[in-house]
Length: 157
Image (tube, rainbow, N blue to C red; front, side, top):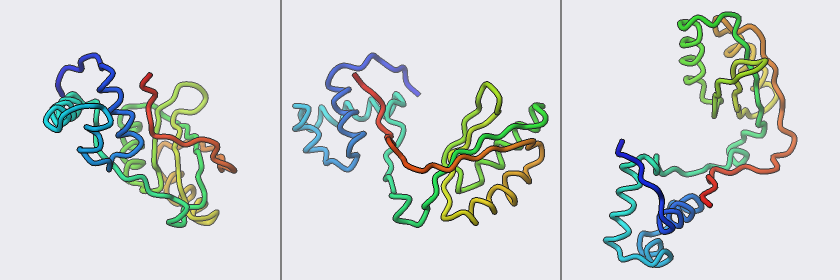
């Protein structure tokens, strides 16, 4: 990864636009930030090479695919030896229902963002997969009743 240089206003504009719609054509991007096509491509390449643009993705509507339950699961491990922690992390990475896994400070060790189709799917995930990972001591799951805000855009102001 290249050295990250300070962002100028055109870089910020580009990143804002791409966070909103990564399918925007290069011609439209160049027009909106007042750059030539070669100038735009050069900036995009530098943003990609520096790691500021990590990847381009499509956000899929989870509910349209039947993933009606969004949950947050707190997990505590009984032991914190490196091999136990590594094993937990590797197993969680293999669970497609787990969208995010964060290592925490405080009462619980990990926070998992989970999507499932229904309560039975949640029960199966918790009892047959997560609690079966060696070292898992306790879990606490909260079901999201209403998603107030969900964004993938970082603040660039």
